[in-house]
Image 1: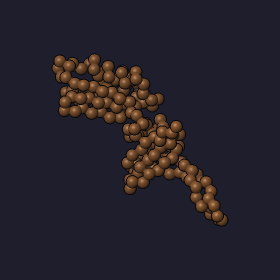
Image 2: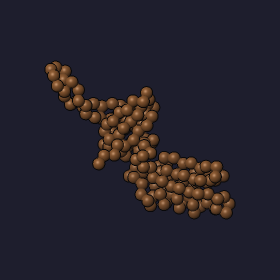
Image 3: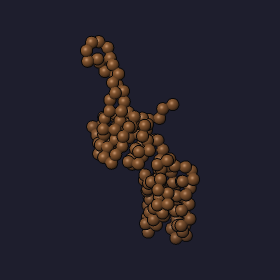
Image 4: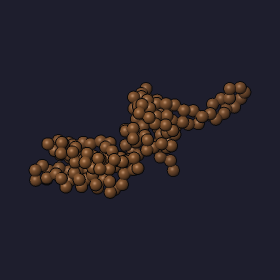
Length: 154
């Protein structure tokens, strides 16, 4: 009962503000509700409050006690949703693929099946001694991505 009601109230907010989307939702046996959201244009405190209030004000604690936490997806959580890749275009990512291979590069393309990263690498010259800087790129299907996160640079 609580789960269906929370789903419905959460969906109301997401339908009202199409720029927001759900990353994860958990309702434990002790009725602890934890919701993580993200947005195409980021998430403000006001967005979290809007989600929290819509759920909290429409549930009756007398009927069923609960606790509620609403978070915005942070850099530490990594990227799990196609819309998150789209909002992080032109940012540097570290992607771990199946086989535990890591690729770091700038996100330059996103579609429904894959992402494309670009980076520069130093390689030996084809002729002669020394190295030359070359532009590399790799397309990575979502099915091959184990973990992806935005690299924070200062």
